[in-house]
Image 1 (cartoon, helix red, strand yellow):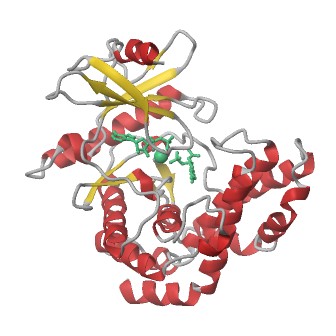
Image 2 (cartoon, rainbow, N blue to C red):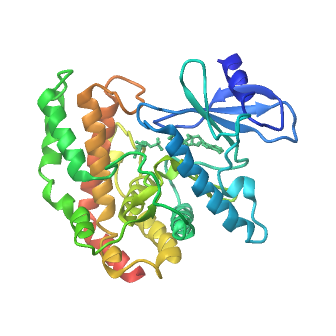
Length: 364
Ligand code: ADP
Ligand code: GN1
Ligand code: MG
């Protein structure tokens, strides 16, 4: 692998010399490596072998990321004291002048500057960190609101569309390709009992009551990097930045920022939503977006975490039934374990829904 990484590295326009490369991070989609350079004063890099089964049109995907990072970069340049290499992802051009390369095996790769001294959390332990995450996402949405040009390309159509996700889910149950349906009966029933209430955001969208905005769509907390003082630094993982409802970003962030346990926690009694973390994230998020969100968007923020946690449970469960073809797994029943933990989290949100609505009501 080291030689392979060196070969790929050398197809990009870099400052330093490749010294070593290691797998990096906990992403479920791409193969991510940290590439270190030999020179202490040169940047290190992130190299990613892109998942082109999931992202079928890499040039269009990369064009989105070029536009988004270009726009953020121009805005940051106008803010004195900005650290451009750390506050925004910096794509590295290939020697052919593109933002990706295709290797001899047909794999797509891209490269970013490695963001130094960042902290990335899978679990959040303090309200202060959740607050910073909320600020980062609110600010990200605000900065992209005036992105010029055509709407961004939809890199994964119907990504958070729960009606489509449920259709696919039911088809998978019908096919039962690897005979796992029986093992997941309780979880399947939990999902089916809540189908109707989950359609509300799509309905509000169709009725024109909430607008499509530019959203991130994958605001898992480890996609929000904090700095060495745990202050908001940079929002990463821009593959799904495209038109969406703000509820998707808010919900996915709470799903991860306010969970007392890991996304795939096996011991379900450890999984719950910490209302203090919910409140802190909401405070940070609304400090940046209070002026722009419309009253209906605000009203449904408290509902969003249930919707997205439920949606991710549906996706993990579908992938389990399909035989693990989408998410990277680390053991045989991993996707089922993930789905169970997400379902437990939905239950905890259901129990605290009244309190969540009160907090949002107070903060907006
Ligand atoms: P995936 O879609 O597989 O989650 P990401 O783009 O989120 O891929 O990258 C995976 C992980 O790599 C991130 O969670 C983060 O830890 C790390 N990472 C990605 N880009 C950078 C960067 N520019 N600097 C430092 N770390 C990064
Ligand atoms: C994936 O790429 P990553 O690991 O940050 C997934 C998200 C899920 C998440 C669940 C493109 O996120 O939608 O919420 O796993 N990304 C894609 O952990 O499907
Ligand atoms: Mg990620």
